[in-house]
Length: 600
Image 1 (tube, rainbow, N blue to C red):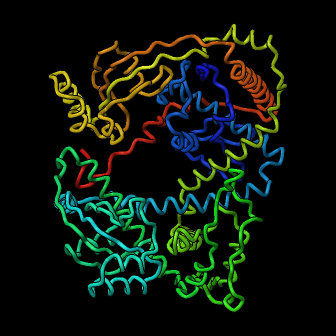
Image 2: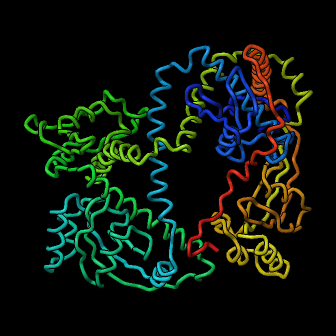
Image 3: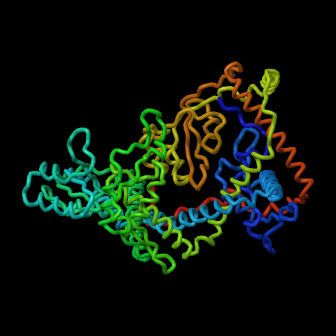
């Protein structure tokens, strides 16, 4: 059982995710950037407030007395968040005073996080966002082939030479089973039938193009994938029913998006390989793969723990092959080459989860190498394109670094008496037993529509007797909700958000009016079942009560420390300047991109 949220607004460890790390914050200020507070000489400006607020998820916003996120357009909510920022600045000052900012691990974390966030932002701009753009022509062409599928027999091999030989043997009229026996190196299904049915639109375009260009009874050319080289014989071509074009529009767009992403990821990788002159030695690749230990386990069957590193076999490479070039790339005008011997040194020191496994075929080994190369060349590309300097990237890096700093500071200075007596438990229970009760839960149905007008129309169709599962398919915009036909179960009374608020305002069996669901969308909800809550049982909750007592002690101590730090460093507030600042919704709401084909 989880305790009920309280109205105490304190800066607990979970709430300390966003604060300003000394030496990493922006300056702020300026005529149009109002001053909100001065904390020991460090100024908090409106731009800083909005930047930090925009980084929060809805569940991280300041809460009211029953645990619901505050409306951040209201003066009291803005003042509450400013208090949070001030408290976090006090923590920065104390952490700096205690030397946390000078720890080497902070510098190391900064470097790795900056690389990660810059790469993520570049991927979003170069791959994810463009992949979501679908024209009417693309949509119609894709829909035209939906329902078409190929039932195929297949062979998977490690190298292109083997794939070509298997293709030629099959095309020469050899029995397919003989070709499989001679060349197939992939897994064999438990059924013993090495077949796959491939529906149109589900796979990478390159794989799909080759496969769907092969006639029934024909044998494809080699198809290169991350899992090896495929040779496919098309056994049967079928045309099934198409989904309704309008009802399935969102699902079709998601399918197209995923497929375009796979293609764009591959194309971008190839572009970067050409730019950074990435080269692989196929002979070395075969030598290394052949040397991988066979049947190496990740988990020891006796201990049920990972196999210790010192019990793992080394890569068995002949001395004559150690100096052979394995792969290389160019950075800053310098060739970065890795020999088989270099790879062996890294492999022999790696743990069981880091090692490529022989059972994953050459594709698994190649994936491991590609990930290593990608770390360096994608970082260089992100740096060259200016992603390291992007404000949003720097803000995300600061947030993660601040989490490390906060955790360290909190753990060092907030230390309490861990002993909890029965008298402590009885006293706490007398005051707080209601927090441990089982909450009321509700189940029902939900439709999240694209606009208020569509939500109203959906409601009218429900009132007129149309089935909910049909209405949600027509008007719904949330795929997860649509896949459940709009059903949801066991939402408890402590849930937050507009949907929960609407749900718990309804008598059982009633349907709500259309309400604002956020992100510009509107919803309707029906309450189908109410399960009342019940009191908690103290005798079965001793451990949780004890943890709550310790948490309360930490909160009290931390509030006391914050009060001391406020006196030590000095705080001046300018709450009158909060009025002009944007709310969380204004900062986080984005208009849907104007793609030619919309999801509804």
